[in-house]
Length: 150
Image (cartoon, rainbow, N blue to C red):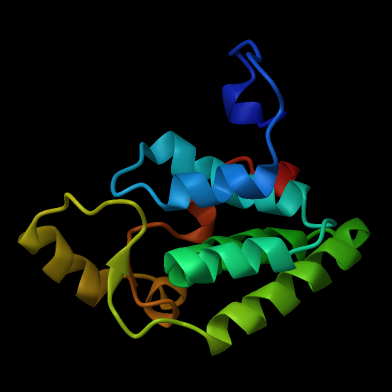
């Protein structure tokens, strides 16, 4: 899908819907960090499409907190680029709708196998964005290397 972090790989098979790719990734109990890193880039890159499908399917699968966090990261990078104003607005609206339907349960960002000690540490040291979305994750905006390039 053009993600710079995987530019060294040859494209195989049919091109998938980027929103389907994001939801499939977010539904995984454990996901490799390089794949998590690509998610805000995908959302920022394809934010001009209709996000209702993405929102509806995230809610059906109980992924609105995970998706909300990734949308927050993607919006953060879009705000730094004036030419991306429309896409940033789309992401901000999606983020607001997801936040209204945020789940109270604590979750991880595809790191369910973390130890109890890691969970305790993350509860004390997670980012404000992760706290907002009830996620135990170490990810912060500066960790998403290629999202600025979307």
